[in-house]
Image (cartoon, rainbow, N blue to C red; front, side):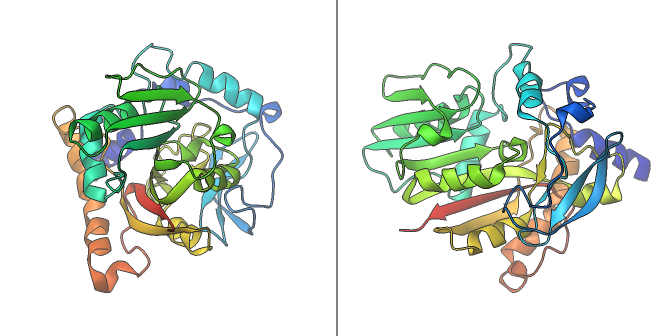
Length: 320
């Protein structure tokens, strides 16, 4: 029974739309940056090595004593990452990190991430959303429901944007630093933050472009507790270079960045139950104890008692 459960846990760590051979790349010495004592997420430290993710040369996931993020001790070089991600969607399939658009939209409703406060035009930043289909779906659904009249989606990614479903939705592609300050009503950062070596600067830029009252939804791995118990759990280095749990998000929002944490909980199960019932059931059961804790007022502010959840999601609001 336990071995079968371990197999489910191991397979649940693999992404749906990237083959395993593409993930398991050994990064050579020439493809790694030098080790840094500073945390790439907060810029401070110190960091303590926790789990080795590669031998020869060694790369560890190290925990920051200041912000509680875990990150690779050595980051892949920019040239390596450009080559690595060039064929990320080599099969020509749908270029998104979460393929069930309507299910994701309903999740955004439940967690309070949608910009219901906006009147007229809504501006949505899709940060790392592949070809932007998920954000385009959100925009069109908000229009169909009569929440907004029109929308503009700004896509920050390598991929070319998909075509909108109607003329009421526009889409442009840009670099994050090109996006005007305090211009976005909603930010979708689903399954992207774990890929960015210089996450400290990226998060600063995201906060910069959010209007007062704007909300950001973020989803990222929180897999270090699983890895320390299940040695075969795949942290997916070099694709993933950060591991971000509830402790990190609480401290990040407490650092007077002009944002507050509206919601912090285990992330959505990426497997649709109808397609992969055993995987979806196992993932849901693993997340259940943590869901219970974050909903109980007496336990909500305590450190997480059950940490084996695999991923974490947050809704962050820009101060008015």
